[in-house]
Amino acid sequence: MLIFVVLLTYFVNDVFGKLCPKIFGQFECPLNSTCTINECYFDNKAIAPNNCEQVKCSADSRCYKGRCYPTIGLPCDRNVELSKYQFKSITSNCGQNGKCVNGRCVEDRCAGVICTENEMCQDGKCSVVTNTFCITHFDCGPLFKCQRNKCVPFRKPVPCNCDPGEICKQGHCVPEPDCAHLTCETGSFCLQGKCQTAIGRDCTDMVCQGDTICVEGKCILDPCTNRCPSEHACCEGQCRHFQGLLCHRECPKPYVCIDGRCMRNECSGKTCQPGETCQNGFCIKVEGRLCNLAIRDCAEDFECIEHVCHDLLINTTNSSKL
Image 1 (cartoon, one colour):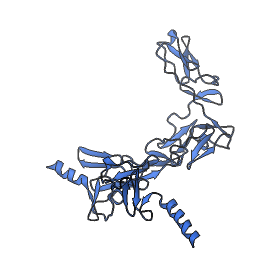
Image 2: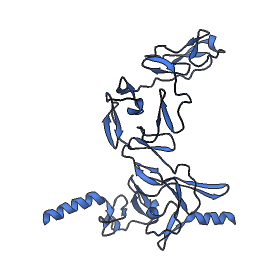
Image 3: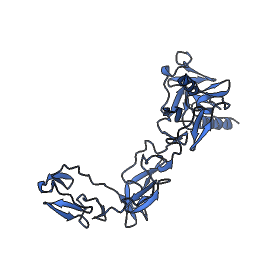
Image 4: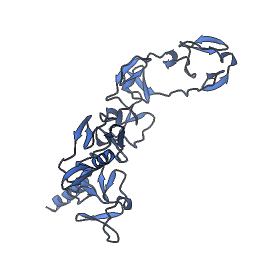
């Protein structure tokens, strides 16, 4: 029986963590305070104030009325049309490792994870990518390329940003006055006052010019120019949709890099009316919804009054019409 109680205690502490109270608690106590029964106390026995300016929360929690709430799963971000020419955008704090996706804070388990140059983070863990089997570049991720069916680190050459009258050589701009007023077509570049083809040139230690890219050590025309449909990535002529694509920290908007893969944020740029919030790309009415805690049951800039969600922006809208 004693062993069961001890195991149950460890289980409760592991599952519910620092919640106050430990079982079925809703909030965490601010830093430097402890939970006694269902209230937070500082060392001097004073009750933690209900003012967020006077308390400090952990990096993965958000303060609301002096108490700290784990951010993951909380409603987040709003774009509200207050009037025909007035809009308000609210960006939420989803914590150190959280991102707002489809109206809720989601944990990015790869946030802050540092891997070696031969690895990439997936699902919160570093996985070796170098020398793994691949068919396309997309199988390797943005930091690697597929070469002879094996992923190898992709080292992008340092590009040149040369002034007129200069050309790029081995990553450095050097004077070439004969090329100052000469424009060459795609696939060629100016050298000593004449347009030279860039296609087929060795690019092992040189930067490809004339809108060409380096493939297998040779410069070729970039096959990605205007090739892929929208919301697709292109690499050496191959197209792949962003959804589920391997990523490193960032994805092109409206996609968000979560756990090492791109996920579409359907609420990105979505504007709703007062009393509503975006969830999974749809404007959902929150005004009048039953609640116990505004930060969890309603949305940003809502209050839970007598167990009913009320949008504070509705008062703003009514005032602007007067």
